Image (cartoon, rainbow over all chains, first blue to last red; front, side):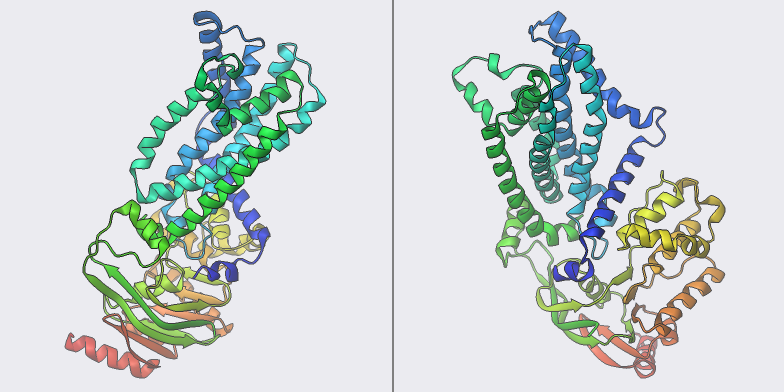
Length: 262
Length: 245
């Protein structure tokens, strides 16, 4: 029966149109009726940075140089991931009518979620540059390596989003579990702290966290003006691609079940 | 063939189900489903519809019409047999998929037309015609939540019939809007038929089917009871309905 999709949707151009249209719809739905609209894509990470800045320079000083840019680089990367996975886990349930639309390619829904949050990430990116300039960090050609990091993060985020989107249609508890899991993941990821400064025997394990690799790549590029750790990034990319393969397999395996369940 | 249905069967488990493939087994690890009583919503249904045919599908409630339609539309998996559909298919089953109350009529029009299978450029080209057909010109930039349900249905129907499909599948929920608009809908479907498109109409109302179809399929208890000229089949069906069996 899957052949129908191919018979009916021969063009990758269609997938592109559908994806951009759905991303536009997501952004409109999200900001319609709010006074500041899309500006929130910039304001909310800025607000988070302000809070963390106060906490970790005044209350519990971590003494990390250029701290605002340091957190911001970690935070936008994390937010892209976290929001995608959390929103993704309910996207099939929230868009029941699209899931049950004959011949609609359903994998577009988690892809839309990941894409939408990537757009929000890109909108927040100029603020990172502004913070770097504000804190006197020189902008270097290393910034041109950033798109490579995006590709890896896109793969990893998409893989997790696809997986949780499919599984949460069958086990609704997953959505609640994810909330807790994300808090744990947040603290295990060097978002407001520097992994190099953490000591302890098992700390090396934290380097296997793909988000740690991605965030450290962001910081090497933006703050140190260096190339990221290509080896770590390459492994991370390879792992993400495999994970995406597995996630898509599970998605399609569950597809016939969730079409009848949602 | 436009639609080929071969020995199609669909079994539901009234309590849970037994895994038949690894994929289903995987699905069941998560649902912790148990084997229950088997219920065949469809059993050994075979027919073919040639391009350009207009076919009516009749049957009382629970005869398996909806299950058959869902499988033809690729929703869910057949237990036995197979379905093949060729060409672009539009199904007027789920009008207004992708509609969101806070978006304007125009925004919803675009989303729903793209979701139904059109490229953006194709929507641009049909935009005028869709809006005219739906008769919502002056409200097109208002949020959908301000529309009456009639207006929403008109917009949804207008989009669905502008997809320009090779195969049009129409479910009985065709009672859209006032009689004036209904007339337009019928004309539009008639237009599809004249243009040589394949038409599959589903209803338990023989009169509506007789209006468009030369051929009819009669579903009964999950099986294909009769397949033949619409006049004949619909007459038999109507007679049977009067008897009340």
